[in-house]
Amino acid sequence: MIPWGETRLVQGNEAIALGALASGIRFFGGYPITPSTEVAEILARRLPETGGVFIQMEDEIASISSVMGASLGGAKAMTATSGPGFSLMQEGLGYGCMAEIPFVVVDVMRAGPSTGLPTQVSQGDVMQARWGTHGDHPVIALCPASVRECFDMTIRAFNLSEEFRTPVLLLSDEVIGHMRERVTFPRREDVRILDRPVPETPVEWYEHYHPAPSNVSPMASYGSGYRFHVTGLTHDRQGFPTRRIDEVDEKMARLKNKIVRRLDELVEVKTHDVEQSRVVIFAYGSVYRSALAAQVMLEKKHKKVGVFRPVTLWPFPDREVKEYLDEKDVVIVPELNQGQLIHEVERLTSDCVRIVPVQRVDGYEITPEEIVGAAMEVM
Image (cartoon, rainbow, N blue to C red; front, side):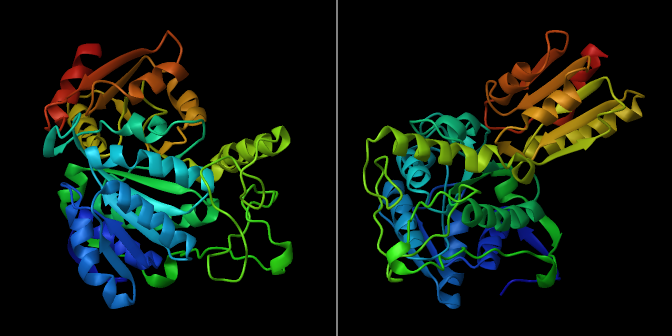
């Protein structure tokens, strides 16, 4: 079923579905919405063939709720959505973070707000991914820029979700989701598939939120014989609601520390000639591809620029941005929104660094020529 080691022409959304199957997904609950629908269509056909379950729910709220239920029952679970569907899932995402339920949410970004421009590209959900839920907690969000990365990052998203006991977001976009590329899949033996750590303690000693050194404790499933409670209320180690200050502090510190203390494992960036360049293009997702093309075009004009790409959007690569960009003359930030990650770049660089936006919100991709034009004005 998974074309391990083979070379094929594959669509981005298809690669996400294949990555989920490779990860051992056993449940998908979703509601069709373009441009993410192919993920659901493929899994509707392929998942039952592996013994898994596919359910088309009545809406996105029910979708993410069903995914959480499946995960609590021990299944690797995922949903996929876009645009307003991602907005509807925000409360469920917050519940998943608080209850520490592992699952994957794929958001194939399209132009908005509201129903906006269906099936046209955008990067407008970047800040919603970080701040869409209420409360205060870190999140993990990965951003592919190729079809092969759709496959690889879906696997990584599942691994991180199980390892950190938290929802993980895969922020694709319409161009990446609908693009078809020639992909050589890795060999099965070269891919790490992480299964959920299960408790080994006796049933009577089990704590669903045991304070492990990593801030992530093995997770029992419903039906496995262990007793625990799950709620969105702030809870104690067994999962029952609490307002005790020490237990509330322990819980909130746990949600934060299990991510921020392991940034070296989470944060990934890619750089191209950044150290040798005074002008750098900061780009992610499909725009990263335009940035690479612009770099080549500028080189033909004897203009040297670097390209910096955050692969992990959240947690944001604070240290790497400061290290690579804080002493540059100019950082060009092309984004398919009205300015979202550009503010993170501004936050982490000094006033001496000139930040140049290149933005589109009309549903069309930023072209390499637009980035070249912005670069030529400052070089």
